[in-house]
Amino acid sequence: MKRVFPILAVLTAALLSYALYEALVAAPTEQTMGDVQRIFYYHVPSAWTAFILFFVNFFASIAYLIWRNTKADIVALVTAEVGVVFCTVVLVTGPIWARPVWGIWWTWDLRLTLTLVLWLIYVSYLVLRRFSSSGQTPLLAAVLAVFGALDVPLVYFSIWFFRTQHPQPVIGGGGSIDPRMLHVLLINWLAFSCFAALVCWSRYRLEVLRREVDETLALEALLEPRSSQTRISPTGRAG
Amino acid sequence: MNYLYAAYVATWAIHVAYLGTLLRRYTRLRNEIAEFKGRIEEK
Image (cartoon, rainbow over all chains, first blue to last red; front, side):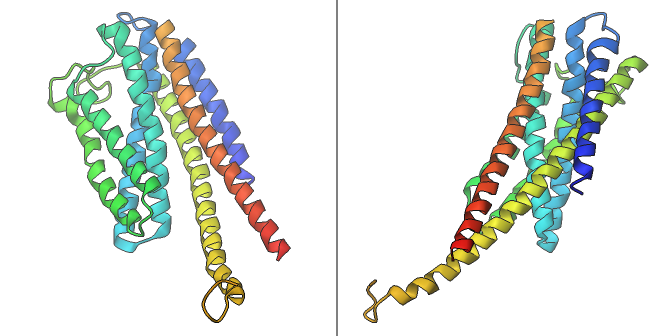
């Protein structure tokens, strides 16, 4: 596995470079918005990747709730963390696109607000996991993740069922897109998905190692007082 | 064009920052392992 990772990393870097070239150079310029429309090739794939990661987090959390499986708990943690990173990209690139096109950075539109709520839910999930030392933390986090995942379809379908300022979906939902633009969009999505998978893999390995080290240190701490007991006098005072 | 480049640079800045935190955590973990090994060897 250690040999496979660098190969996949190089392939992903090549794919990301190709996707960047396609987005900035090869994709046709949109007539109304001009070059700023190319933000779409990073914004939309990042959103799709974040949604997939949050769905994986949802299923891993369900798996943890049913079987109390440690691996499922780690997958849930990892996908939530990487999903928040991609969701942050969505929330940053969206306003950068909106400023020249809408004339404003942000509006409390349904899609935008729900995306911000989604981000806040998963940030609170990570805060819970980071700062709670209770043994019940994975359980509480799994329950929070299950409820948090309900926001994902709300975000996705908000522009289908409600009139919002956000552009309508380009795939399905009656939208249309130039085939060359669709090709670039899908290439970027593939590249970002591969990148997300690699980052999740690294983060998974790191978390497994982290837990092994914590367990070993805890075991060492348990054994430590026994050896120091020899220094305690029969009266119970430390000698 | 400035907005376009700002969006692309921001995207990669976010990803690089996150990868940086992963690297920092990994380095800290390796140091902890080395420290632990040192303690074991002393005993």
